[in-house]
Each structure stands twice: as C-alpha cells, then as structure tokens.
Length: 128
Image: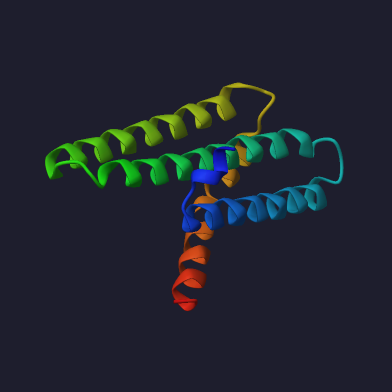
C-alpha cells in the first residue's frame, strides 16, 4: 500500500487533509444546496488530492536526501520544490480552463495543506 511507507507526521498530515477536505465539501454543500456544488467539490478534490501527493513527495524526498552529499541533497530538494510548484500551477490551470472543476474549489483544496501542517505540528509537538 502507498501509505505504509509514510512517516508518522506524513500519515497524520494526510489524515488532516482528508478531514479538511470533508469540511470544505460540507461547507460547499451547505452554501450551494444544489448540484451546483459538484464542480466546487471536484475542484477541492483535485486540490486536496494534489496536496496528499505533495506530502508523499516531501516525505520521499526527506528519506532520499539523508544519504546524499550536501550539494546533491540541496539540488534534489530544489528540483522537488519546482516539481511541486509546477504541479500546483497545472492544477490551478485545470481549475481555470476545465468546466468540470471550479477554480474556487481547486484553490480551497490547495489551501488545505497549510492548516493541516500547522495542526499536525502543534499536535505532534504537544505529544513530545
């Protein structure tokens, strides 16, 4: 399974992202109260799904750079950052140009990573 290799913090962040996605979907259903919520929900799913993938990429990059030389590790992390940024741009473009997704939903989905990360860090530090 894809999540079996994840670190504890990455797993908790993924769960927090799923909870925040559920909150975003609930809020959109309450706001729209019709089928007009579907593009927003799909956009949020696209953005949140990308965030889960980015968490997995960060966790993998962290595990890979442990044995690298400092310059090689620095270059690898920079490349990973550019890839994550490019993926975010592609998802935003998909939300802007494809009628299946709402750009607002994609934006809401992409913005869930920061609160999830803060929440996991606060809970993780509190438990240490």
